[in-house]
Amino acid sequence: MKIVLAEKVSPATLAVFQQEPGWKIVTPDQIKNGLAAELADAHALVVRSAVQADAKLLESAPKLRVIGRAGVGTTPTPTPPPARASSS
Image (cartoon, rainbow, N blue to C red; front, top):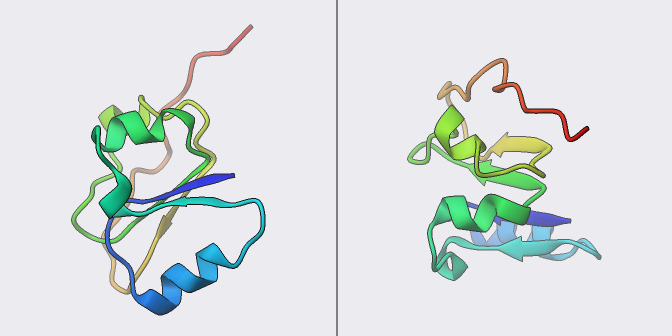
């Protein structure tokens, strides 16, 4: 499973993600061609408060199954998520 951490997280948080076997973790430092390009084959996205997981960004993430928000507060992500076209 590919998980994109769109923003910096604490070293302890990063360590928790990195301990899971089978998880490929992409940190903000590793995002070279933009977040949308990195999400093309990602299964999960973790944001904090600077990155907005809006409909335009999510259009570039056809395999995305979950968006997590690290931290505390009430910054929302879109609900419900945008509808996707059927692959059939």
